[in-house]
Length: 210
Ligand SMILES: C[S@@+](CC[C@H](N)C(=O)[O-])C[C@H]1O[C@@H](n2cnc3c(N)ncnc32)[C@H](O)[C@@H]1O
Image (cartoon, rainbow, N blue to C red; front, top):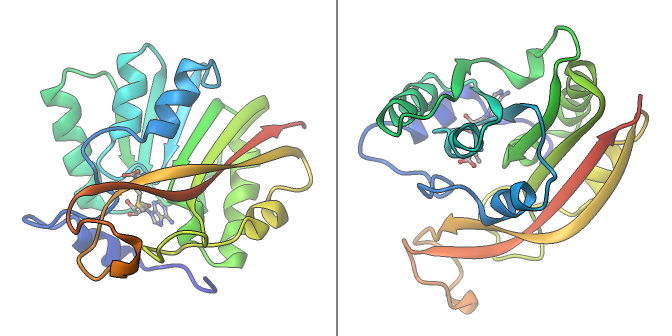
């Protein structure tokens, strides 16, 4: 993808009566697995949190979790969900491309944010993450892979390898991202429209190495 998608497009996706394909009502299995295997710690930023499933999941497990998203409707829904589930997650409307401030996060989870950015914004975003992460922090990025059925902004692993260079130690693995299958998905993939399916994704883990 060469240009990033505008805020209004995402905000409309969260309008009443519509459920975007990524909003599956539960945390991504890949993030659950990261938590179970000890790869989440301390103060956590959920970047591009949408309606907050990951920040809520992690706050319920004792992490100090903040979710940010630039779509006000997403944050309103996240706040409602956290209140309904009695989860101590914090949420704020904020642009991940404007993140500043002292190094304060030990973990970042990004499910589907990096892959919506164009190349320039990917570089800016990663520089911002470097500034707000403490040395040793882990940034986990789950991004749609171009080996999948063409749902959403799928990509090769190259943009990840090009963005996380100086100041990071990067590992990229094949993984999956659970989505609600859009009705216009190529039937050759044998996926059932409007049902959840696990489709190919990249799981990148970048360690802040100073
Ligand atoms: C594919 S959705 C994923 C949402 C959520 N992480 C999830 O797993 O359900 C991408 C999210 O990133 C948000 N987003 C896009 N650009 C952003 C930016 N510059 N700053 C903050 N959030 C952004 C969108 O509003 C949207 O909620």
